[in-house]
Length: 465
Image (cartoon, rainbow, N blue to C red; front, side, top):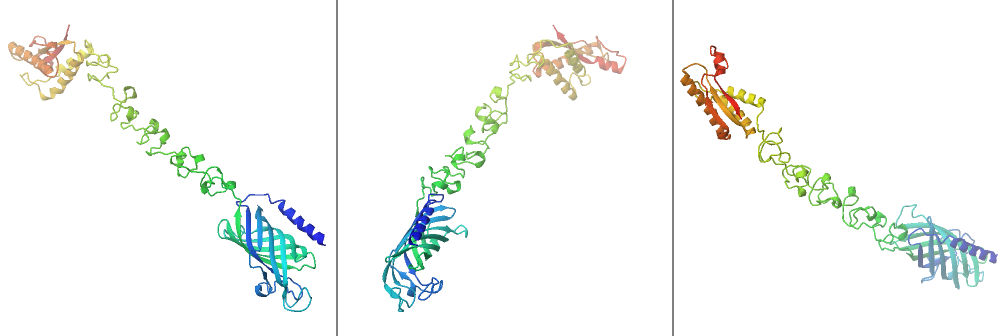
């Protein structure tokens, strides 16, 4: 029987250590220093022992306590809440049951001679800390076995343990437990062993010192933040460096951590004008006049113009409506049809138009002064004369047959010169114009009718060779 108990004890230790190399939690190792109490009374035996759990907390009469550090435990976390613990303890037995001396077999007080008590035990326990969702209280149950000696008597035991750990910090806790030891030999009584001690956890590795253990740290070589599983966020913009395109400059999530200082929707690293809001189409630079040329490259930033002219509008120096870039005579007013150059000779159609205007000039009756409504007609003639600065014209005055010939001759001359004077006053070179009067000599209609006389009162424009 003695050999059987020893074999069982060895088997328990081997079975326990065979899985103790598993490691998937922080600080998998723990050591506990404490004191223990041995109680032979409430184990379901006849007098001098009592029923199970009878007077379980009667420490004064039944507990054997060595008032010093008397237990040492080393624990290794296995996996999924399971832990293996190897425990050694010593004690001194001077109380055994009630009214019975185990040495003499005679009734007496429960005092016995001091007996030495030694125990080596191993157990596998399961923690209910995650089950109850607690961060400080850890209840656990354990089963195992060991070997216990009382003086020279030794035997193997099967053990069951109920305990609680109260964690004071991440690595320091108070361990309180009670173990029932059932002996394989009749000469070693069943008993309870209670203990209380301080537990210190260790063994976790935090290479980068960021408070997150390597096994849970996605970046174990770089100090980081818990929110990013131990990975860093160097610029503190809420985006971890591995996902941050600008890890050293705080930025925006929409730009993968890169900044947009001027808020124009263009990242600073792609923005040619990062301090001034601009347009995406111009790489973040502004375009005040909206001509598609960035202000920095625009010679006329406040006046729209084509990129081909550095953002400035094309000039029209001579004001003829043909831009200088297309004007073959940029300093001389011309016509669109002649690429900005003046027409040397007006066409027959132009001359017809001039005469339509000139024949509609209205003079005050019997005078060489214009009626007010004639001004628009005269301005239209000025515009045509300016289109042909190299052409010369003669202005011919005519009258109807009313009145004397001499009077009509003089009136036609005055009216022809009045038109010439108006044109000269409005910018037409005097050398280009001559004026003559023909009185009533060249009618173009009958002077016998009012309508005919009206047609005969006219000024005609002739092109001079």
